[in-house]
Length: 144
Image 1 (tube, one colour):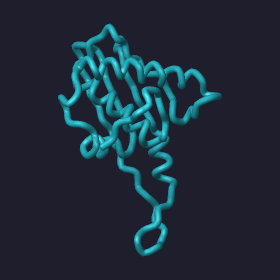
Image 2 (cartoon, helix red, strand yellow):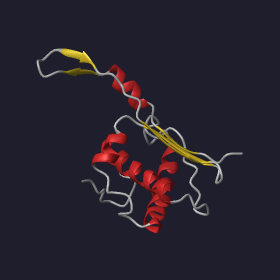
Image 3 (cartoon, rainbow, N blue to C red):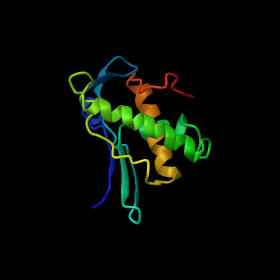
Image 4 (cartoon, rainbow, N blue to C red):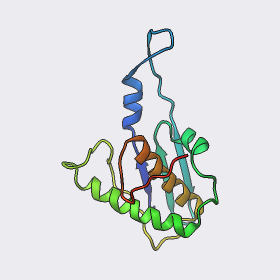
């Protein structure tokens, strides 16, 4: 059975499709959603990361620290912390917005996912916190 790490926030697609946006000339125009999906898979390790969130790919390319800026151990430590808090919020839909925290993340510290997976998860957590004004702990959220 495949161990999957899924981060899905389809709510943005719905919001992006239904929110009218003002153009520069003052007229209202429907904003079209662009499918912004990041996927990494490794069949030998049996994992898959799918991130669906409008804006994440462009944020990753323009604002995230470059690859190899952080060490693998740093990313693994931060991801364990962020995923633990994320999963706690999923289990408390009466306290935290269930539209933001839709499903748990199956991130296991004993599995070596590699740099790319940890890099994407970490950066998604930073993007998520900045975009939705959430704090998954740790206080300072680095943005460029």
